[in-house]
Image 1 (cartoon, rainbow, N blue to C red):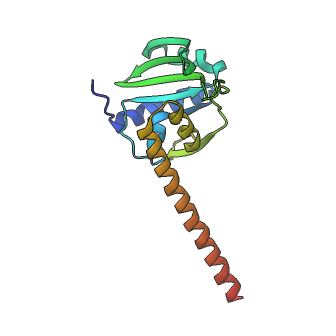
Image 2: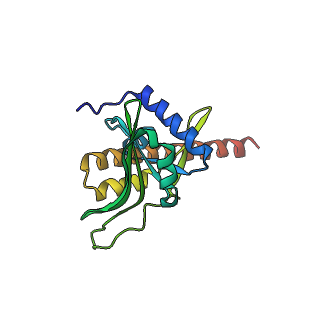
Image 3: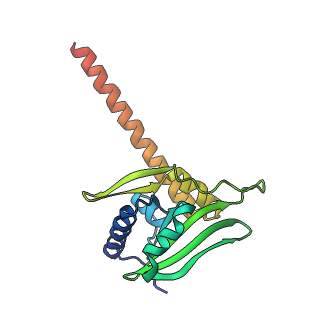
Length: 183
């Protein structure tokens, strides 16, 4: 099965999701591989888009995407995860919609449902800003899913971002020193 992604197709589907969900006032977060790509993590893209919605909005999302439905919303649990999940396909791109996502921690307790408040705005183009899951939360998630390759790539990107932030702070300090000396 070819899971490689056509970024042009995926961007069109992302724009469709953005527009349709925004019309209904539904808050959603882009998660998983596509979100990692947008954060600059060097991962192999897949031919799907994963989004997280609040449990209260899951049926509204299903209504909006009904004509693209592959799997209706169902809440399930496994040994490691609990979530409500539905799947759709538009223009050859699968859309996985999750809500109430939880995973079991090493101590055997369950996390609270995947938080909606850890999202960060990402400007895709002049018409579209979407919310991405934070890299820190994606790291936690992929660690819980036992995906060491992605965990390593996320850690690499976080280190790169930390180094960039350090350089920016050093540049700001140098600028402040230059301004102080010039006075």
